[in-house]
Figure (cartoon, rainbow, N blue to C red):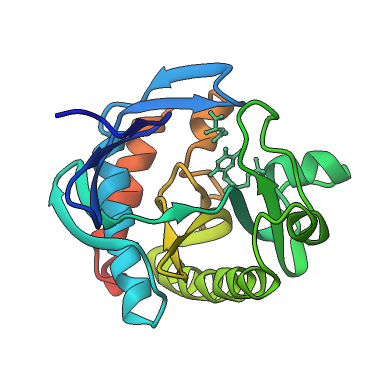
Length: 235
Ligand code: TMP
Ligand code: ASP
């Protein structure tokens, strides 16, 4: 079937006027696709983890584009017009934040921090301030307020989900879309788009294993899936 769009980690296939089929690939990229590789089984993990988390968030009143899982690697979602923003929430310093401000990875932040990046591969997803988002007309003031509030709420809910599964949520990235004037959480929520550290060992259990060549990448993705699917008390 003809593709609507192929990104670095997913392929979108058109369905009806209202829905899309998302296929999750095993291909992995980092540093704006300068580093490329394959993480066998990643597509299955990311599809299943995203589906569980979208369902969990919906159950707690967060509106998302998710409709249903179609297969191991595919889900059906509502068509949305993606806002050209990556919305990042940080609980601890890590990654680009730790580097930018010269602080040690892992130090807790005094409050959860929302950051925005402009979604542009050509520009390397530069950080953008809320005032610039409004000045460029990338979102309306009310929409931006809603995106920020929803991101903070998603952060609380995800931390509460992962903590009893032995995982410390360090930071994550969300994307939002618009549909009939309504803002919906879109894209994916997976070990590609979150940092998750094992509570006991402090080991990264996410895409940082690939970014930093730490080894055990496939195993970490499988372990995250296992814990996501497990009942919290059994971890
Ligand atoms: P950063 O510290 O590299 O800016 O990443 C912050 C969070 O965003 C981290 O959980 C990984 C995620 N992320 C993406 O989902 N896509 C990206 O392209 C990048 C750079 C980060
Ligand atoms: N996915 C991004 C890229 O390849 C970066 C990352 O996740 O580190 O550009």
